[in-house]
Length: 478
Ligand SMILES: Cc1cc2nc3c(=O)[nH]c(=O)nc-3n(C[C@H](O)[C@H](O)[C@H](O)COP(=O)(O)OP(=O)(O)OC[C@H]3O[C@@H](n4cnc5c(N)ncnc54)[C@H](O)[C@@H]3O)c2cc1C
Image 1 (spheres, rainbow, N blue to C red):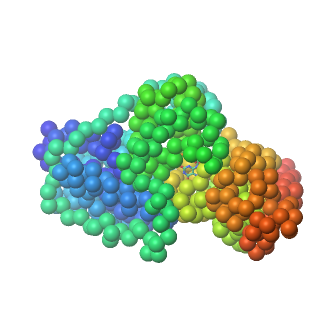
Image 2: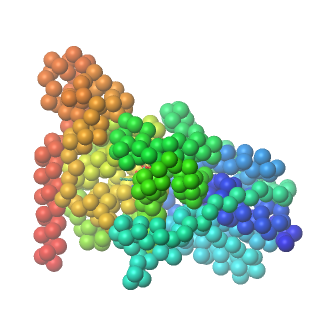
Image 3: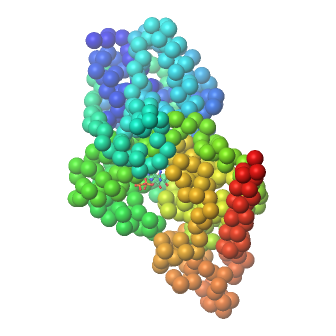
């Protein structure tokens, strides 16, 4: 049993429940130093956007509160070099060992490998565990020993594997007199208060996660029917909590499975989605270039046609396609967008508007509270047709049909594009087809209150197909 301190290095596992790194430290029996190092400028690490920083602030505050309930508090250090920060703490407080949960993004894996070696060379015991995923990505291979690139066989393979059961331990002893920077000094909150709607939409705490988890159990029976209807609250909205590790995927999985009214529906519905998250992490872990380049490298030669005006109109929810604009405004105001609408809005950007998928991914990265390198890269490459198991480029979503199908009464559009709320359900997805008199009686002047479509669906579709044909031609000429 250790008598000297153990550092628990929190990263994207901002919880005490079912946290393997924490549990290991508690089992050592010595005093714990619960540490968070804020190192946004670390080489190769994608800097968080404003929405994610907002979430991180609240998640850290909440973790500190949870630690206070156990008689401790979170030690925060702002740093340019986490290894140096660790070494200093180890030296000052005679730390004997250090425990963390692994992050699986390529740059983080590189940093962690270096850190582990440097610490071990100094005789410090390091312990790393999987606290982020259902299964460790390096343990998953197909029958030929290669990483999976198609979701269904990946899912079948993973489903057959046993998952660890959540375990939660309470810390008993904590090191004292460890200096901490203040949370506010990290300056994670916006200086201009644009976060009001976010605050009313989210409770970014462990309590918030548990309350959504409870709802997810009840929703699991209707998940397949409601998951594609963005006006309903049919999905769990747990993605940011999973990203920041306020809830473990094991806790999500086992809690839903044990308490859901219909296990078969839960397994093939909401719990299957958790394996999409696993699949995204698996792809990023095994195909490291896919964080910013096409997973299928030939797609890097696709003839995109960058246009700043198009990009800006899309970002601001001013494309003239109501379902897309509703999604982009939901994203801006809440830091989250419904999955179906992420696909429709993404498709309009990369297909009708021919903008590189990386531009869309960057905007999502900056504005999502659940911005996650694996999920975001996979999502965008799915839309662009360049990823594993992706929708082929020539399959082009029609944003009007998608709007009518998944928002049949226009409720979602009315909520996020209120200037169109006077239109009927038959008019709302195609305001440009409504007569000026009817528009006037709904209080809308096209081009003034709401834009004309940035491109017609037919022209955009044709431009996308032409670009695809020229890309295919070039590829076959080589
Ligand atoms: C272009 C694009 C970009 C995306 N970027 C991100 C991102 O940065 N971060 C992110 O977490 N998700 C991303 N997704 C995936 C998906 O949209 C979100 O995970 C989902 O909308 C989260 O809502 P929820 O928690 O209610 O999901 P639920 O339907 O309740 O699903 C439960 C959990 O499963 C996981 N999950 C669900 N759907 C997917 C999916 N398609 N891919 C991967 N994991 C999934 C999430 O962790 C989610 O919290 C993206 C999808 C697209 C099409």
